[in-house]
Each structure stands twice: as C-alpha cells, then as structure tokens.
Image (tube, rainbow, N blue to C red; front, side, top):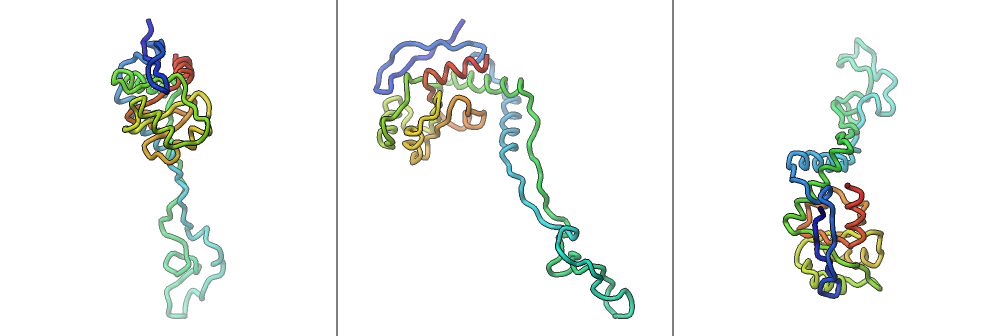
Length: 209
C-alpha cells in the first residue's frame, strides 16, 4: 500500500498523484530516536579546533633562568612556566572531537520517522519541477507563493544541483536549497515546509526503503 501526495505544478494547479511507500513515509514518530540523532548531527558539526599551549608546547625556556639557591628568589626551572609572562597556560584548552556514534540503521530510522511526521502534518509539498531559466529571486519567490510556501521557512529539495535555483534563493533568508542526497535530520525539522521535486521524492523514497 502506498501513500498519495498531490503533484503541484510550479505555475499553479495539480498534475496528478505521487505514490510513496509506507516503509519510508508511513512510520510512527520516534521522538527519543530523532532527538538523539539530531543532537549527534549537531555535535558532529562542531569544529572543536580551539587550542592553547601548555608549558611544554611554548617555544624556549630550556635554560634555568637563575641558580637554584642563593639568589633570594623562588626557585624556577623555566621561564615558560605559567607564572611567567609568555609562559604556557596552566589548564590549556585542547582540540576535541565532539562527534557521537550513530549507527546507520538508527540514522535511517530517524529520517523515516521525520519524513513520516512531515507527511502527517501536511508539511511535504511535491512539485513537478523546480528550475529557473536564469537567477531571479523575485521569480523564485513568485513560484513559492503560487505553491503556498512563500510566507514560511521552506526547504527546497532537488534531485540534482541547480545553480540558478541556488542563486535565486541566496537572498531569501527563509529559503534553503539542497539535493536529495544532502538532506539531514536538522534541516528537515528546522523548516516549516519541505518542497520536493518529483524526482527527488522518488530518490528519497527508494533510498529509505
């Protein structure tokens, strides 16, 4: 049994129905799993590249600055000690990998769960094609308005990269563009409306079955 979505024309009107499998778009919403996968995805995007030098990493300081006894000063073995200006940091920040392990089956199950919930909430919109003869922000906004997604935060999912569409959406703060291979849990849940081309919807359906 397949689920049915209306295929909208970019110029207005409808041109039929698109059947989607229940295996990809008919699952129950698993909130704990989706939360875990989204958090793991966000953690994996963290650079973790901050770094400071400890006393071993600071250049110089090989010689003892003054003799051990007799100078009246506290003993010191290196001018790169944290107590000296130009010395190392006592507890330095170091590079860190924030990524969390998520099994492939868990990730795919979370994607199915999100897409199924978007389908139930009628936040999936299928269009026959989405292309621009030339970059035009005004033209793309007019198309989205005809589709009913012009006043909301929308994610446009294409089968392949379309430079004219990407350039047209670049000046629209509420519109994001990606291909069917680039969708992820974060961009799916962070947009109010997901606009899929027919080909992109079929590719996602086939990949998640």
